[in-house]
Amino acid sequence: MFVDITNPKSPLAVENILTPFKKGCLAPDKKSRLPKEHITPDVCMQILKSTNNPVNIKHMLECIAELPPSEQALFKNVVLATFDRREQPEQIQKIADELANDAHYVRELDKVRQIKTCSFWLSAPQPRKAMLFTSLPCVDDCDLSGYEKVIFLSHEKIVFKGKCRFPKVLDFLEACFVALDYQNLRNVRDIKLRQGVELSLVKTSHLPENLDLSVCDKIFVADRDVSRLNGCKYNPCALTYVNLGGLIGDWDFTSFGRVKLNRSSLGAVKSVKFRTGAVVDLCGVYDIASEIDCSSCAEVYLDECQDSHWFQLVKMPRNGKITLSRTSCLPKVLDVSVCREADFSYCDFENVQDIRLSDGAVVDFSHARHLPSKLDVSCCADVNFSFCSLNRMPLVFRAGAWLDFTHASHFPEKLDFSSCERVVLAHANLATVKKIVFKNRKQMEESQFLEAGARDVKVVFAEDNFRYRRGKTENKYSETWWEKIKTKLRDR
Picture 1 (tube, rainbow, N blue to C red):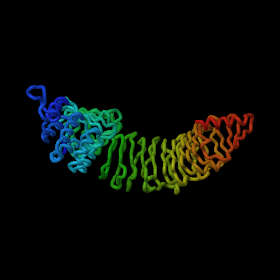
Picture 2 (picture 1 turned 60 degrees about the horizontal axis):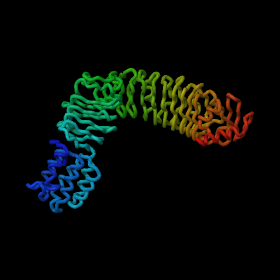
Picture 3 (picture 1 turned 90 degrees about the vertical axis):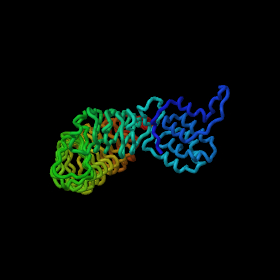
Picture 4 (picture 1 turned 30 degrees about the vertical axis):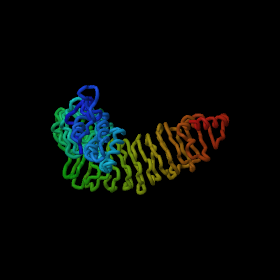
């Protein structure tokens, strides 16, 4: 049973109401007090409509606890309303547990406490103009129209569900994500948002005029017609289209900076146009029947692709990023040479014979399986082979390249990192390696070579012609130098 605060009063005013039941009223001689009166459910409801101050609520429940057990059962709705969408401290919870246990409605009280859809703190003595929400992950069918302003203190997501009624001002300055999907904002005059917030307005109607959405990183909508946002100030690159189904015919997404068509059927789509520099999500799409030109896009996500034939229909983003994570249906010749960055993490290359990469590409092969034996990464500026089996294929690296071999295995017999800028070999299995060429000792230290599984590896430094093999030096440097290096790295 939810009781809203419709007649707010100060804590002192509420204490004056409770005085006859706590101490008893003053006698006519003003020197003694009359016997304490028995509190009634009507008085308790009056208090709940006036405040949620913890001191007032505690005194009210203590007055109930002093009553005979037969009368305490009459206050069941009062105790339940004390916790229905209200936050209470531990002391009040203990008193309520005793009352519920004596009157046998403990289960009902536990159910009311589990309601997290509208938990709020109401103890302000000022007139009914503001409400402060402390923990509000989800609001379901909540009526807030009686308030001038609502301030949400949640630092995470705030989601409105059902048919909610809103105040004139909504303050989300603490929230990082706000979902107002399918809501009617007819009564709202202003919405305050923090910098970098993500705002979902899927099927939201009657947005306030002159609404400033320029602080939003992402604005999710589900309508191609963005005319309802004409009165709002927003960054077109932040506007994100969310597909709810029914993609048929010609589609123009040039008004959107981001387009999410993931897990949609594109069989009835004839043509698609994207904005230059757009981010397009095609993860898990199916039934691609016509060509999709993504050449002008900045990023394209084609994760979990289900048919290798689709790579002939989807044009790769020129100088952009392509993500093919968790894809196994790859063509024999995978050409991403027009892309600046490629993500092949968790891919299966069993059917792939050749991968064509661009000059200076940034490539991620982490957790990939069955890498092609003729893979050429000599043109790449940054390559991630974390958790990969390299199948002992020969590796040639670009000058100034950044390499990551964390937890990698099955290396070739010789590795030459002398031209590389940065190398990471943490926890790599170097059992198959016989010789490694580093640029200098500093590069070897930073590569975390000692953390790798190296048993009998000859290490050569290109700059000072220094060699190390199983802890023995082969030039003018003494053996104690290598022991000092190992001790220094071990201490770290």
